[in-house]
Amino acid sequence: MRLKLDLFVVALLISIVIAYIYPDLVLLGEGKLLDRITSIGVAVIFFLYGLKLSLQEIKSGLKNWKLHLMIQSFTFIVFPLVLLLFYPLVSDGIQFDFWLSFFFLAVLPSTVSSSVVLVSIAKGNVPASIFNASISGLIGVVITPLWMAAFLSFDGETSFGSIYLGLVFEIIMPVILGLFLQKYWGTWATRNSKVLSNFDKFIILLIVYASFADSFVSGVFENTGKLYLVYVTVGSLVLFYVVYWILSYLSRSVFHFKEEDAIAGIFCGSKKSLTHGSVFGKLLFANNPSAGLYYLPLMIYHALQILIITVIAQRYGNREINSEQNPFGNRSKSEKMSISLKRK
Image 1 (cartoon, rainbow, N blue to C red):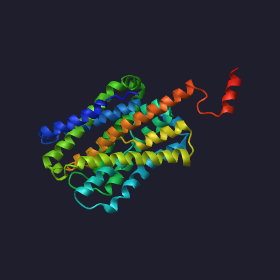
Image 2 (cartoon, helix red, strand yellow; image 1 turned 180 degrees about the horizontal axis):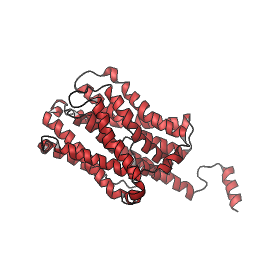
Image 3 (cartoon, helix red, strand yellow; image 1 turned 30 degrees about the horizontal axis):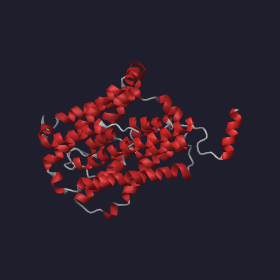
Image 4 (tube, rainbow, N blue to C red; image 1 turned 30 degrees about the vertical axis):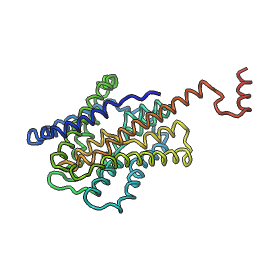
């Protein structure tokens, strides 16, 4: 079993290092240049997403409504509720920032491309993963800001209405435009999706750089302590396995999904989108000096979910292959004899 080094995770780390060494780049154009570039870039990302969005696959995916309901309920209700259990234990200051950074992670939509790829590797229900990953991002435009509004105070240029207006202009309208032009450019966008994904990653890196540069300039990280990163990493790891275990139990022991559906449910329900997190955070944490802190769990969780789910997906895939190569598998003696007689 081979694990490839995720170069995007490495690039994220490099962007943070650059933000630490050269934080003043974020101040170019009175601090508005980078913000405008990323706003345009985000709109282009979701325009391309609209070009590639398959309405036919979404329509066909509506049939498996129990699986979809479980995934979306877990993504936007159960996941946040797990974090809310710890809210009474949180005090002000750095403890609140630590908790809020994990809550921000919990209320984000599921990721799209990696969920589909990994479900495919694991021989799961790919159409269901495409449906849920696509719908999740659209639902998140409404739900994620509502969750965060309960714990964030908006003032000055940033208001609750301006956040939704920004999401409409940077996500909803570009997606609609992409869908409208899909019959002209959709095939081109799908054919060049791998190349276009590099543009997505570049914009995310710019957003991450800007957020951490602001935090370094304001000195937020000077108050976190040396073990802060360790706590975030351990918290992300524990959160992932808690969520993964609950989803596994619900999929197999409560809803009794077929294995293909269970794989799609577990993979989609346990993953969070760095793309949507970057876009939402850019609007939710505008002018917030703690923005860098709020991105940390998301980036670490992103790296962990890719690493862990890749290992699990490869095991599922190998198990499927082995069962095809060995038709007897773990069957009883009578079942093996029956198969042998049929083949003869």
